[in-house]
Image (cartoon, rainbow, N blue to C red; front, side, top):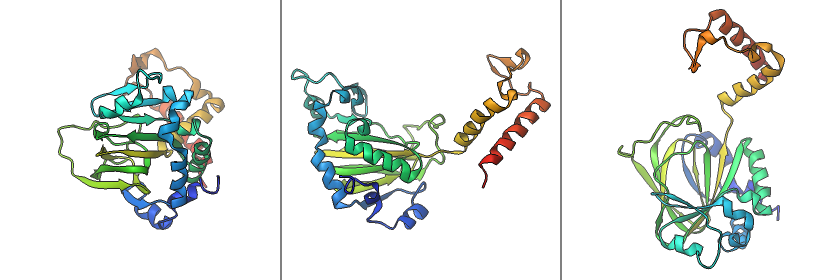
Length: 273
C-alpha cells in the first residue's frame, strides 16, 4: 500500500527541477499523474464509503456560489444526493483523519514540501459551480480522480498573500482567466494568489492537497516565542501612556524600541547558516 500511495508519484511524470524553478510559487501547471497513484484513490471509492464514517459528518459541507450548508446527520430522509441534484458540491475536509492511506500521504506531503498540509475531497454529480472566485494563501494540487472539471485560473497573481492579510477581491473587476479542463488522472497545480473558480458539467471527484509554507512572519514569530522565555523585555507591560485601546503610533520611546530591535536581531542570528 505505501509503495503505491507514495507522494513521490505525485510529480513523477514531470521534471521536478523544472517544476520548482519555473512553476512553484509563480505559475500554474496542468500535468498527468502516475497511473498507480490514481488507481488506489478509485479503490477507496470515497464518495460511496464516506457515508459509513461517523467522524466524517462534522467535516462535510455542501458548497455553491451562494452559500455553504453543513452536513445533516445522514439518514434516508435527507439523502446526500438531494444536495448534489440541486447543484451543490460536496466537500469533506481532513481526509487524513478518516482514511489510514490518506494519513500516510499527509505525513509524506508535509515532509516533502516542509510545510503545513491539508487534504480535502470534492464531489459533484450534476452540473454545479464551486464557490465564488477566490484565491488561496496556500499551494494547491488538485487531483482529478473521476469525471472531469473545468477550472478557470486568473492570468495574474496577487503576490505574497497571507491567511491574516488577504486583500479583498472586487467582484465587479474584470479578470482574465485561462480555462483548464481536468480529466481523470490529471493534476492541476495552483500557487498562492491566483484567483480561480470551478464548474462541473456532469460529474466530478477530486482531492485537493494544500500546502502552506512558512514565511518571514512565521520566522519572526518563532524568534519572538524563544525570546519571551529568555528576555524580560518581551514580557514587560507597556505603560498606559502609550496605549489607547490599541498601541498608538509615535508614542513609544525610541530607546525602548531600539532595545527590542537589538534583542530580536540577535535572536534571529541563531537561524543563520
